Image (cartoon, rainbow, N blue to C red; front, side, top):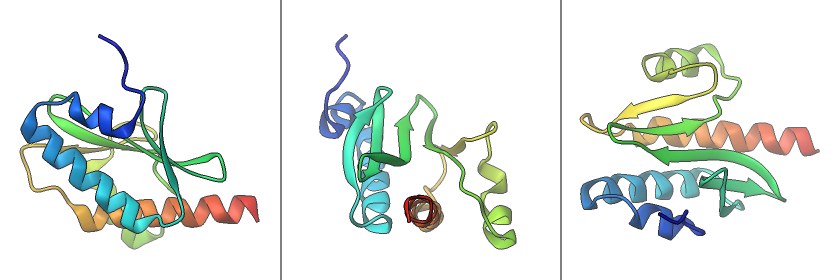
Length: 119
C-alpha cells in the first residue's frame, strides 16, 4: 500500500464511516487554527504555520488521535484528562460522540503556543 501524499488521500484510505469522522475532525481543527496549512508529515495529516507543525491527527481502527497535548490551564486539563493516552497523545474513541468543541479548544491552544514560540 502506498502512503497518501495529501490529507484528502489519507482520509479516503479509511472505511466510509471513519472518513466521515476524520473529515469532521479535520474541519474542526481547520476552523480552530486559521492561517494554518495542511500537509502529510510522518504519514499523518498535519496543520502547519510558517512551515512549523501545530497539530497532527490520525485515524485508527477504534479511535482518532490528536497530537501533541498543549500546555493547558486547569480547566482544559480536566476536560482532556479522560482522553490522555501517553505523554503527548489524545485518543478519542470512535464508538462515542466526537468532542469537536474540545478538539477545537486543543487546536486553538496549540496554534496560540506555536505563534508565541515564533514571536
